[in-house]
Image (cartoon, rainbow, N blue to C red; front, top):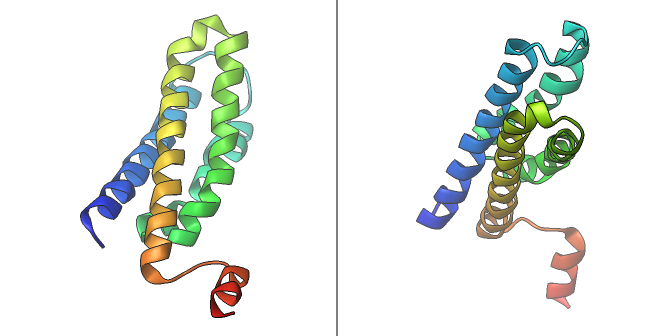
Length: 129
């Protein structure tokens, strides 16, 4: 893995884990919400845990599909910035971490996938023609 790909991996890993920690702090250390603990775990924490192992193991495919999960947090933070002025700091940090994780995951998946020769079957078939 070359140096630029390693930087993308670290950006993805640090911002993704940072987002997980931040969401846990926000949802469980503050009194902004009257939602149940089970609801918070299922809708805020659990989605971030699905791709975590693949991100830790530096799997490009997992980094690519983790972006679908990250969009939930991106949209959540934008919504909270708009509707809940008292939570703007929390939502702003969530937005920054989700954006950094999205960029890191995208760049890592693209560059590491190319370095490993991974890609869509259709693209490989077109190259053979």
